[in-house]
Image (cartoon, rainbow, N blue to C red):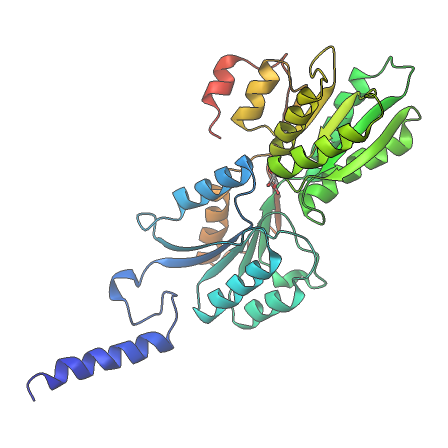
Length: 331
Ligand code: GYE
């Protein structure tokens, strides 16, 4: 009999614990009661940018800072992100942070989060939903603006060109906000510049391996090599794959050869930009953890956060880069 009470209490505790969630009101885990529970749905680890973005989140949402982070890596599949959101709803997390892989297909699952009373914060990319109240806030980059910065550089670099300017375009994950914005900027520029041509548009899925494959296949299909003026790469890892394929097939990349344009401007790309193999790197800042925390703290204090916040970004060429700047780059 003497052992009955502790065992019964333990069993009762387990029942209570399984019925409750991971959120702060959980009676099951007194040591973690005050932690804010954040369920995070990350796209994957497809690029250097993405890895830096995940690290930024993990550095902010620590127990020392008052958080319990439940981190899910969707391995670049939207269905995995949807499953993760449903799990976080079941666990009754306090906030869901979602980096949506693509813009469409979110209405129902975000409605489920809303009905469960869990605010959703969108990071990096956007969702295309009818009802804006399905998310509390969005923090990311203005991808159309980034694309237009690249176009402005091209206008300057090819101002005097009388011959056609031939641009090979390698896109990121189709349907993602980053792809849609960067692509729109290039396509609208090709429409308005009579001598700009777009002989090829390929899907590089934001990865070096996929880009190397599609670019090698494309270059091998060209009869005896062709003039390429620009390769517009929608992120750094695409640029690395394109560089590898181009150089293997005998194309020179740099001031006297093909101009590579890239987005993100991580340290690896800035290094190539400093040494001239990449002509232009448009910055896209992945260090969004502190901004997400500000949104959560605003909501904790009962304030309504800004619906959309965009980070400031700049462009790099070998002219404004220094070795010290590249060295000090945090990502
Ligand atoms: O440019 C790319 C990544 O959505 C801004 O996704 C992000 C993009 C970034 O994989 O490297």
